[in-house]
Image (tube, helix red, strand yellow):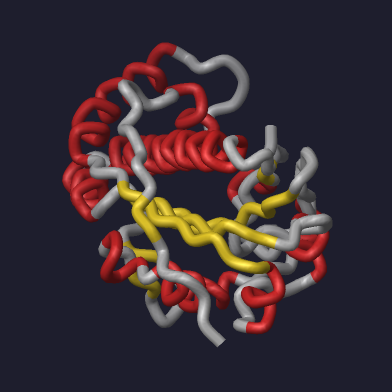
Length: 228
C-alpha cells in the first residue's frame, strides 16, 4: 500500500527569535534577568543568520497511516479522533544552525546552552508558521486541523521517526535523516501529525503522566511543563 508524495511547504524565517520562549528552554525561572537576556540576545543574531528553515508535508488517510505503522498508540488515536485524514509535517532549521551551536560553545558552555535553547525556540516558531500556512490551505476547503502531535508525546513512540522520514522523503526533500537511535539530523528538526476534520477540532494532549519523555524531561525536572 502506498501513499502520495510529500511536497515542499513554504516557511519564513522569523525576523527575531522569541527570547522569552528560549529562556524557558534555557531553564530560566520567573522574570528573565538582564544577564540571561543579554546572553540570549548575543547568541541569537548569529544563530538566526545560520538557520535555513525548510518544511515538507503530506496529506493522507488516517487508516492508511495506521496500516503503515506510522500512527500508533492510544494517545495519537485520541488526538486524531474525528479525523479521517491526517497531515504529516516535517520542519528543519538546517545543518548550518547545528554548526553555529557548536561554534558558539567553543570555550563558552553558557553560550552553547543558550544557543541550543534559542534553536529550540526558533524551531517552534517556524513550526507555528508552517501550521498556520496549512490551516489557511485547509480553510479554503472548509476543513479544520488539530494542533501538532509529535513522536514522544504520550505513547506515540519515537521509534516511528524512520517511518515518518520515509513517508515524507525527508532525506531527499529537505536533507533530514534519522539515526539508528531515532534522533533527527539536523538536530533542530521536528516531525508531527495533524488531524484533518470537517468540523473544528482541538486534538488531545496526553500530559506528563503518559509522556514517553517524562523520565528525562528538563521541564519536569524544573517543575514546569512544555505546555505552559
